[in-house]
Image (cartoon, rainbow, N blue to C red; front, side, top):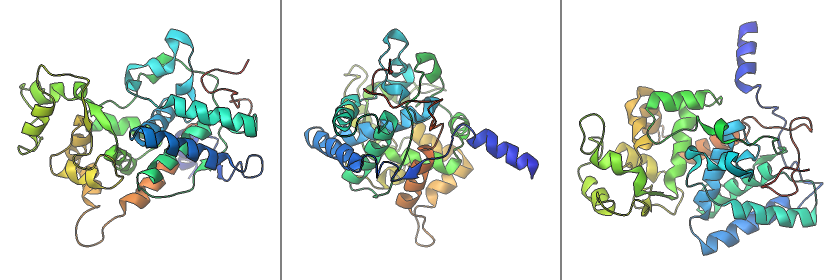
Length: 318
């Protein structure tokens, strides 16, 4: 039992685990509605905003925990400049929400909390599950590009993906379910070129791509085409939150190589299959909520010794 307690501390000790739903209810009662308003307004002009918000939360939490470190602009060492963060957007939505919150209730709501709330509202905006988000995070004191070297990567094997999730106290199920966040959003042809034309080993296309899907991908991303051209990650359902992405993965219609890797491991494949079938079908939406809340606890700072409430999100306080 003692060893089990030690192991649990190692896994979860990085998080102070004192978040709670409604943390700002008395000190800034309109905080969550203010953030939600900025997400909805931005999404009406750019339908990719919900995907940006989800991805921003994931990338923030996977480096030093959910502490807003990805938001900092501190020159060439800024974490947001890391290769693993390329394509992460939506910083202006967070900054705009923060500016309004500082006007209404200064020094109360952290940027890290705003990111978590915005991700929750992004899911709701795309017809996904509505859930309560825990708050009470402080913003971290460190942001450095070198600390983002171990982000999950689209070229990772399933074994490496599992390890990166385990290192954050997350399980195979969390890996499958959070991959389901790709139900909304787009990716660039850049991330598909090797998979379509120079897949290792042997070259040529990735044999796991469904033959009925391969011509469409090649037409969208031809060898000499625009590598910055974007296509939905969830084939035929890129703007609505649903489990279609998981069915696409099972059918060989995965756009991203890392998504297709879920079929390479018996455990992740079994979890993927559990969301389909006629009996004892698991609830993807319920499990997604559980995994999002769990991810939102990774590495949080809740004491003034470990974090602060920034006045603006892209700069540490003086």
